[in-house]
Length: 339
Ligand code: SER
Image (cartoon, rainbow, N blue to C red; front, side):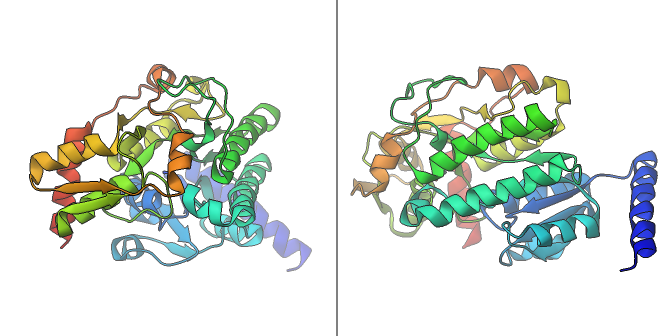
């Protein structure tokens, strides 16, 4: 491309953006990792809200039919900065939700690969925001950012964090980098420490909290489940619809309300495998559970069992909707309807 052609292209891009702002055109949003457990539902929720053509889904692989057919989709490797930049320019993207990551259990099997994916993808997006190529970033953290010496009950927003998994280390490091980019370069990056997320629409991949999804599938299939965590392992969890609502509320909150630029605690609902089995038994009375804890037990033991999310409530009005009884009913109904 010649210099004048380049200059002309840049100038018209600049004016197009100004005119779009003037016309109040909706922001274009890019979701990276759109085919995953969170990405699928978040993409569909944002498309519903902002119009299909304004939400660009991307992932390293294709996803479910409703996601693929409802709006733009691009194959994208979250570590490939040049490819990300091309898509941002092509669609004039202003906001990025970066959801590509390797979760706790899978990451333990390949620590360096997990570290590279989780960190390189975040730096790609933070640097694009620093260079003002995008205006706003969402990046998820997790209860995994806490560790064995964190207070386990009602874990405060600000507390000791000593994660022992590579996933948790990448989340804690990521939180510090988000805060740094906000403080040093004014990047508008927002984040939530998700509890274990429970959904039936898209399967999760390689997490320690995944038992709380598998259990429903097995309960409907065989009326029995062997849990890879022990019966009294309490962990904070959340129904996906609540998590999506929280994510969108945080991103829409006025900038001055966002007091936490590392990542917000979200409590969700805390329960043990034994308690969950009791709720399932209310719907499927002869459901049976036994326990065969594996390497994921040590991971779960290092995480909090309940979370304090006062700050999210105060700063951007967070309020949970679904309790364990609701989740149990919704999961069983949702999975049954898929068969
Ligand atoms: N659900 C995730 C996992 O179990 C935690 O963020 O890895």
